[in-house]
Image (spheres, rainbow, N blue to C red):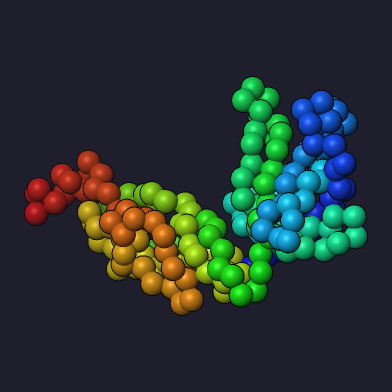
Length: 189
């Protein structure tokens, strides 16, 4: 899995006025859970762009005042009007404890149904998985060569090594829908 380095600075004050001053200075208040103790820190907002505005999922290497910790992004809060990041929660990961995270889906191949005039629809861009940090892939690759017209692949049909899928088993991940032209061609045949 890809990693990204983020430098943080420990916060002494955690009240409303202190976080407001941090945001005005161009920093984002953050919290790290899952360690021996909860760590409150801040990081420059400009350093967060590569973490949020991408379809990739990263293991975050946090450097909080010289102490390095591996973590995953747990929660992000955005301002309702300006869409600026106003708060971030991280979860510290350990080698022996599984984590729950959403991994992007990547489609491989060319569906038979698309060749026959259907339209490919990716219903779920990410799937929620539970696994050890060392087993987390960058993407969940799904082969769609076998998908015919009107057919779909559900979560229950997928199987990945060392991963447990947590989405509903009957949820559709990808489907080939009939277009009007394909429906008309099917009725004539």
